[in-house]
Length: 175
Length: 119
Image (spheres, rainbow over the protein chains, first blue to last red):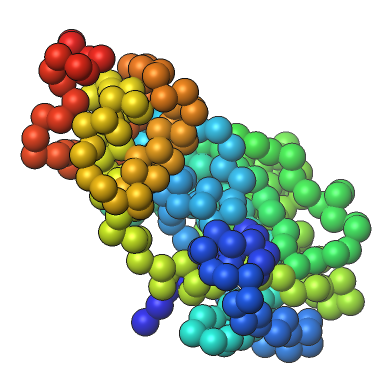
């Protein structure tokens, strides 16, 4: 079964990147009302794969191993067109690019945050919103770029701030 | 700093401003690498790892397959630039070695009298 890969580009961009002819059958984009699936997304990619799929991974040093973790929430609907499937919808995605972190098991956000804080590993993060045209998100967007424990806490709905309640909330509701 | 969950709530519940975009597709998973491209990419990386210029790598290629030579040129252009006489730097050579993940050609193609790398 073909694997559904996340992308950060248009259908036209995908077709060009895949070397499909411009006459290739285009899928019909569903309306917002038709988005009847909700999921948490979670992908682990090499940085080069992420770049090829249109994700803004920036300039990374070639001599160091890089991985990209992408996760978030999406509301979507799959559309089959010809031999391919296309997932359309709205998504809030966080992309964490990790440099030279060696772990024996799966690379998870918890591990990344801990390695950054304790071992000086490097990771950067950015949020991406796709499929949303509202103009009032500015005040809600976090400003962090380096990824560590603070960022991890923000991602998981608790704040690491001066108020005792915030710390307590994080302890009581771990991810 | 606002929690990301607040952002998620604001976006997902605002149906009026949702305009569905492509999030994922199977298009790429169906695309197998063209054999000529694959061979050319490995050859090109190996040549860079060994310190050969593009001109030298193409001279030594001795295979009449445009897909292969195009892939070699593409690898060089991506890693080094479009100067076919430029010798790969140590970092570029190391990057190519990393990308090969230990795979290498069975013959030592790029070293010898006409090769730029005598080290």
